[in-house]
Picture 1 (spheres, each protein chain N blue to C red):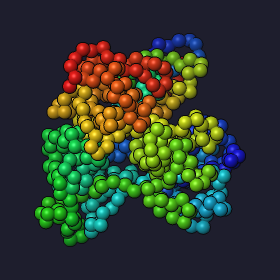
Picture 2 (cartoon, each protein chain N blue to C red):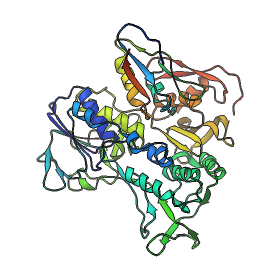
Picture 3 (cartoon, helix red, strand yellow):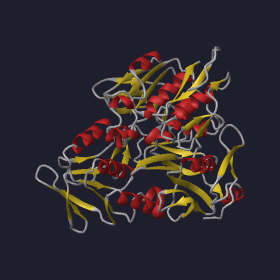
Picture 4 (cartoon, one colour):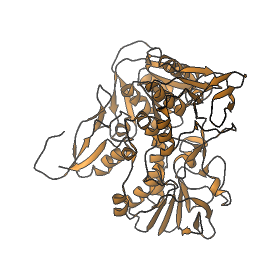
Length: 431
Length: 73
């Protein structure tokens, strides 16, 4: 494909904004449109369930960019504009109304939207994805509601944490046997449960929500075993779906997201790329395609996509292991790589009981992930090992280098980028 | 936050009120960034020499809390 002259980015959040900014930085001089469905300037979502909910930050603190910078970069920003289709034959992004935008290259960065279970959706029920969602939740905390959270995932637990900070009564209902079971497994999930319990959250595990009940407003929720819990405010955090409904007639529709390679390029159309939560992408060194709903992934993918469009790609595409964080109940949780069902959890430093530890996940003799509670400094060495080996790091490498269980170790660089060696300088027994 | 000199050039500085210790900057440029005992960024070398701009820019952009910035000296 020749260098494009006109690029349309659909999605005005982190991934979309970063693609636009990177395209300019890599020398794109053509017309550049950034279409955002929300009416706001691109803003940062992770604080919505943390600092914004706690009142420590306000909407203006979350902005990624202001109008001045967008103007300086000659990025035509269209807020409050909904894309409704992609006409690949005519190469136009169709907008709500009769408008459309022509493109040589299109970037899909429409993100994901919360799943709404089939409960009766009453007043007092919330999901959390947008700034409006977070402000509505924060405002409703003022009436001191009894809070019920459906789903003990990261969003649910972070909202529970904030609600407890306001002194509210909080119950979390989760059908699985532990919170965060999918992302971190049962052992670390139990540590997360203990942390929430100590903060005064009532956790109801192994029970689903059957329905909601109330006259106009939610008054109680009905559990799968028939029990009811009084509720004035319900936050439903049961995951998201990629926002691809608008691509239904494009020939690119897939309910798993926009299928693309490790450069973010759509598998069946070289003029279309995807970045962020919507992208179901290949990752170098890992089989299959997967969506990764993390901040750092969106940033890395945006850079890869911009470079690829500008034919400035590094030859290997995106290969970093996923990394994400969560702040809840006073703990800083960080994770790199992944957990897979059946993987062994090994605590390498600290203790689960103190919520101060680094643990790794081991499957088939490889470290496939690492997670830390309140130990960012120790964690960084493991994150580095995983970043160089997205498919998992060989344990033999680890045994000779990082000293599993070492209480005191340092990072020695092998090079300025990427790979580093974790060197053991402590002498302690294996945990 | 760093030594002032009369020369031009640029330097990278951190806003510790924003830093949350996510350590993305360390992943990009471990020779320049570290975490201190409070799990906040420690900049080992502020001065950005010619040829280092791209790497430092990448570290700045990798920060989830926009706690790093490059400024003229």
